[in-house]
Image (cartoon, rainbow, N blue to C red):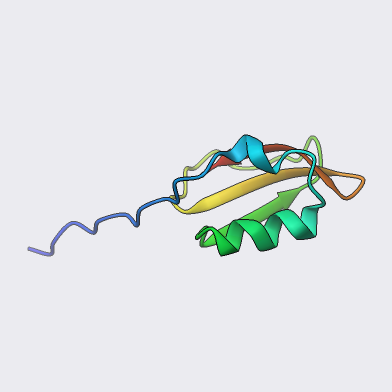
Length: 71
């Protein structure tokens, strides 16, 4: 039987620290802090709700992060 994969550890980071930052700067910072996937979305986007370890989501309006969450 195959072993159960171990999900990668998420960075010890506070998503709220990205709110108010320029989206490009926030993405660079998130990658520097260890996030494997960074996703920028416009407000009101329809997205699936699956949780992906190591992913950071930004809601971006007028080039700035207005909301941020993991997964």
